[in-house]
Length: 126
Image (tube, rainbow, N blue to C red; front, side):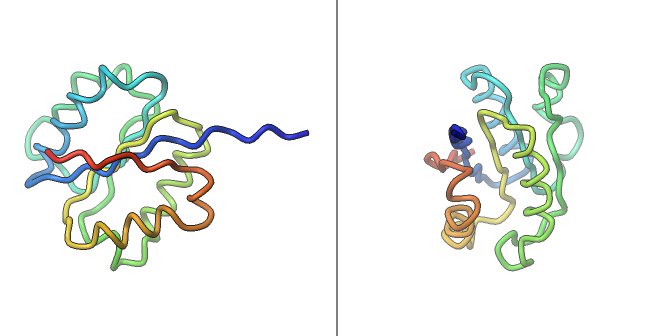
């Protein structure tokens, strides 16, 4: 008999800049228990607010190039997400550079196979 694994709690993080989104994630980290995976779209200028957590984050935050995650076919996001989910984090933050198509991204994350692997939580607004 196979026991189903609990879905990973996933939060979409939106905000005006990469710096603001990363600060919002950093502020949420002390409350996050267990392994936390982070996918960041874009690069914060200068140092990242997540640098203070670098030693304790495993897996390390994954960065992908900015571009509409919905319209680009999700290939880079899909590969990155699949790689991180194999490590079975308890929590996942996805920092989204552009919020125009959040509904489509949310819908994609709630379709197969991610509907069984993720439980979307309310968005985090930076």
